[in-house]
Image 1 (cartoon, rainbow, N blue to C red):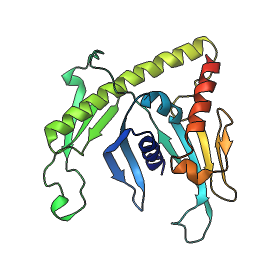
Image 2: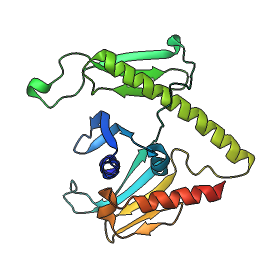
Image 3: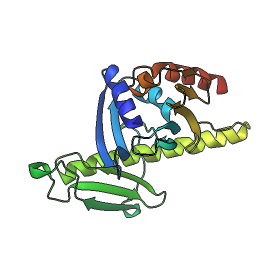
Length: 224
């Protein structure tokens, strides 16, 4: 649901947004995915979405009609510039290939073209399965891995600065940043900025996400 929300928001900005890796859920929906968004200030806007999101609703998969709470985490990583050099040794990489998913019939990928790259010292993983060849998937996965390693170093520096100044690192992975309540009332609330709205469907459709992004950017400036 959140992945589609981000994708639809990107489309309203005329950004390009494509899934380069996607694992379907066991019953429905998406278990995990990587969405590549490209456009002016995309990272600067989307960093507001990093963290854990909480959804409260009557699940369509619960025959008892009970209210259920679920959580989803979002990680936002910038695409690094070619001028930024990150030293990664070949011996520190494990490269696995696997068969990419397909829609069935003639669209099923019959070769192990999907690529997963693991950086052994940090455990950071990147994978790609939507390109036509293993070589192309490896190139995209490697670029994604370098971007995640770069972001990891940035987060370490942010944590050190927060510790130095006695501040809580609000954008660290695992923090619950926002709740989407569809039952028994309608409310989306950001727990960092207190920005809220009852237009839950519009937020989940990506149409009313900007106010939350704007509030986060103002809040972040105040934290510095």
